[in-house]
Length: 389
Image 1 (cartoon, helix red, strand yellow):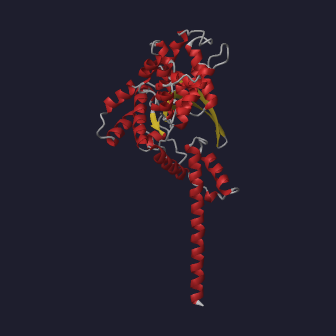
Image 2 (tube, rainbow, N blue to C red; image 1 turned 90 degrees about the horizontal axis):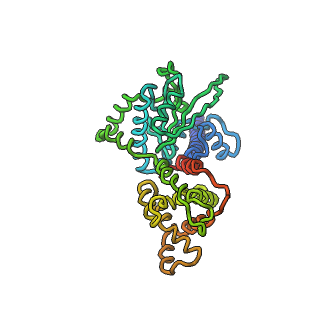
Image 3 (cartoon, rainbow, N blue to C red; image 1 turned 90 degrees about the vertical axis):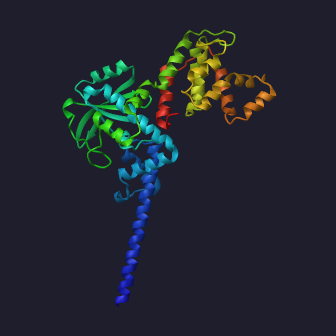
């Protein structure tokens, strides 16, 4: 009898272990799917991501005990970031921390605190730099940003939690890396904010604490020189805007460009490219920027444009701009056979043909085209969603 009982007990233990392993596997599957949804920016909130992931994995109801924690999902997101972003992720993290310190010094009077993924190191493509500032006047913070010439939007978000409704003020700064600055009343500077992931006090750093952290984390870094370098590095979208605006005064030969000025033409080309490849940031930039050199050197606008854009566009975008005139000759069949074969050796040949079609289509007088700020905002949003170039 005793041996039978031992066998039954062992069977029970094996059964429990199997159930635990199945539950553990299910939990990991849900965590991975939720992480994928968050990494691809299909979801931004942990709760919504895990519930959608659970419905997909389980095809129905799932026990609350099988749902992964926010921390488990965050770890899976970081795994995806390491897989897809490699060493560039570490470089971006340092640059983001330096950018955070630079802006925190500007906002010193508002007792800024760095929080979130840039503080903890859990960044991925498109991550914000999250700051808390403390003041009873949002306008004072905006004034400091205006002094720097930064572009930003102010959002007042209504949130209901535990039966209480509150309004949070966020300032979304559009820069090399996006900032989200949350404005709290001045008397909340020493309030202990809790993490939605761990349920504990959030990690945060003042200016002095961040300086000490950076010196410890990066012992070979000359901190002041590094901050000066990021301060001197302009936002690439401001560079694009400065090169595109003068095109409004570039009047073109009406035989080839009945639409008028070069900026109107560029915006039309961009609009057509959005229809062809709405998520291809590099192609969209080539469409928008292909003629910027016309305001610099009309005799060789391609070379002038590429020189002005050097360091601010990828090799693929540069190649498309470099050969956009050849693309026109491909369409009208005036290009030589040897030149055509040489271009066809590039993996970007079909994209060049697409750009050429958009270039040809963007020559209509009086048609609707997006405003310049709309076009730049569209591409910036792509960059924030899918990663910097």
